[in-house]
Length: 196
Image 1 (tube, rainbow, N blue to C red):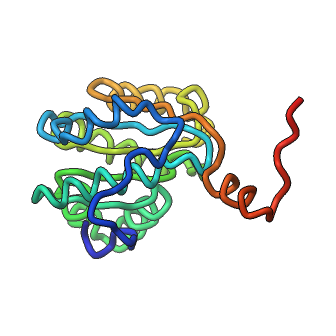
Image 2 (image 1 turned 135 degrees about the vertical axis):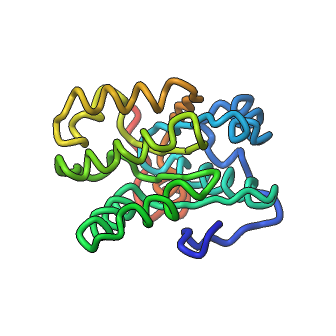
């Protein structure tokens, strides 16, 4: 992935079974990367800690190994970069290099932090520019019905954006307990959950 990508230690092969609540058959079919050739999107949904980011990075890594240009960013970092570029008169160049140039754009933590109206419009522009031209992977801990809360409460903008994201997409719903919390329970750092 590009130099601005999240740094991660890679084993020779990523363990796609990391996300125990993920539909393994669906994930294995997506590993073929044919979604990139077809300019489709993957949306990884689920609670915090179930492996959404891990899976997004794993697919990005597979794409890099296949010679595909990939960019990984969080939604907040992407919007900070675009809004800064807009203020500095570099918006078009930044949009072309940072958003349109990668064949696969991975946007992590969509919906994690709420956006202003201006940021919501910038995010919509990213989605609209890439629609049917290049593939994306988005991760979110929110169901689609709550995305308008993230995008400045703008239901019309959110609906138009979701229409473009979901038109050619693979939605992967990941269930389960946080991997990090599960590891802490195993280590005895936190108590087992109360079965009721």
